[in-house]
Length: 442
Image (tube, rainbow, N blue to C red):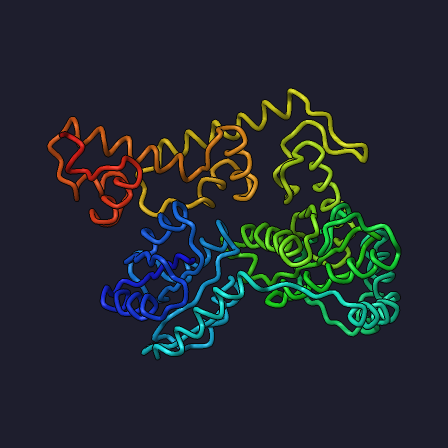
């Protein structure tokens, strides 16, 4: 049974889409309707949403901005775009941030039902079949690709001279212009892995699972210009390149960390392989790859401290006194104090800004110079509750106080605590307290 979120600032379109889908008999039990991006974010944070259908051109928050924020907070939710804007650039940017399909208005009901049913079914049935035939085909390919992996592994560990760049990449059959690069290293755990979740011991099974992991990584990154290769018997490395225009984007860091989270999630989902992903800074030029590779591996070592976390960005840990060592990191008082300090600062920022409409995770994380991914992890670990549950709690408690102590009307209170519409505020209030705002004084 599925829950779908429809986002459009035209109420008639929302109701039309909802009616078509509810009458389609495709297992949808509830459809939430948001009339702008702010309301959509509340639903995404408070409900289990299986699919999002959103317009692109909306007031208050554009569909692209909404999609980028969803990608930051929950990149696993499939998105379908409905829009009168058929221009290529809209579609390209939306697809890069996880949009599954771009349907131009006016929408044909049969086309909408087909797309929705396809994505909802995919969530339940998408699995990989690792047969002997598949193994044999991929094993031959690995032999063919061994020289390529050897060259790239040496390049990131030993370096490259400027006058060698063109020759080597011509040999590899790739052109990498950058000029800015980031490195991701994925450490694979072969314990209790694969379709049968057993320990992978034989050379043959390790080779099969390693190649299956490479295939998952390649498919996950098909929307990004990347270079993917083995960098060890238990690791895969990814080089991401960025243009100057992409470097100027405010979502750049969010994109790196969410790509890493997608990789981790897909490896677990498709081949039941646990992994840890380390992320470097971004630097200019191919000769920087050695430093980036070292940083990504250094980031992974912080899993020795945070054993229940999976994605580590090196920039989150440069504030500690001691950098990771190959032998792991003792859980020192310094690390505990640093983490508590970050979260106290985040709480202070939230306390000061929770009334802001459209408050975003990346804004909170940026205020304390942490990645959104790491902030979300630390907040729940230290505070004991989800960050957005904390924001909602503050808003609801303030709304309750205003209802009990002032003569403010519902729409005034809604606006005061950061909600765009009083109707939406009332829905959240009832979900939180179990009663409508009008009943709170009774």
